[in-house]
Image (cartoon, rainbow, N blue to C red; front, side, top):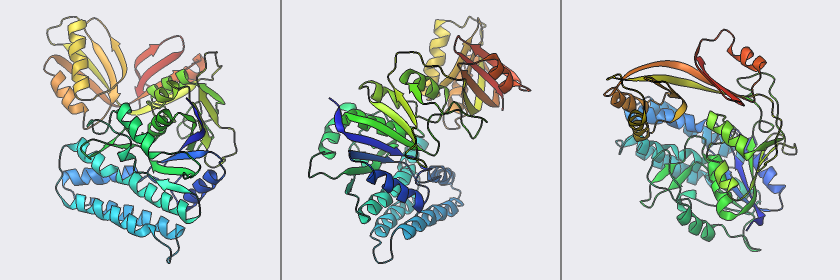
Length: 425
């Protein structure tokens, strides 16, 4: 049953990249009358900085300490701008988190890359929520900090934790209380979860959207709002394409297709928990909170969309031919997909002929090499790197011509509503 008094808000890193951003976030919260669950990402480019630190840590390159100093000063500068010297109760909490991170970095890596990734990169969300929760209280917003790792429980698939919804349901019911004497808001982390062993997992890059959707599902929330630095869902990424168009409405089905093709406006797993309970999703402008934004919802009637342009960079096109020149049929396909699954390589595009199988994948340096090495035992493996995958949904011939002009096309797939092309970068 819908809890009509509870809303879930998610704020991304671009929204909280400065002290001014944190203040604006609180202003948005103060303008609401409902109970709120506030999901926050790491501040600014913190996740990318932590990923760079992780690489140096794993490789034994001590230059990463420069990145640690940058991380430290970035967060300390924000809290110095938010809190007075006399009333800076947040600084000891931030110092403790930075100290814990430093202790980890001074030790030797424990476990594989994926495990180390989750134990280190989670500090971005822990730092941002520690700061925002303390600032909210300091300016009188009635709220409570929640460490989401004690609520959302996942398995030990590091970097792509799978949520145990039953266990998380019980924990969320105990944690998030909505009564007259309850706080108006709960402030917690996106992107991360906890395991039964007390370790941290992450839910996939940009996974804070997914966190918000999970919590909305568990709490039967009225709706979810994702606050972005754009006006809503656009037909293309304005950083890549000119003359973008804001969409006022998008169906769940269309949103899933866009996310699968690589659109970064919504995390691919976000829609399912919402669709399961018909929870509406709003994508709104953090800079213009009163603007209409975009409604993403269950809609069975047709919506007239403009061409939707989605580009994935850093792609690899792999072509496989059986060494014994046999047909690419069930046995071959089973072997290929088992290998991809084993090494967690996700297919962005697939095409098959009698004796060739082509697949376009992300150039993920920690997953892809192992898969290629194993496939080499049974197939002749050829591949091209540094490509892009362009998807045009609801395409027109004019749109195809405009965006493929002077490009070498390696592979093309076309259906009634979608064309997908692997191109030179």
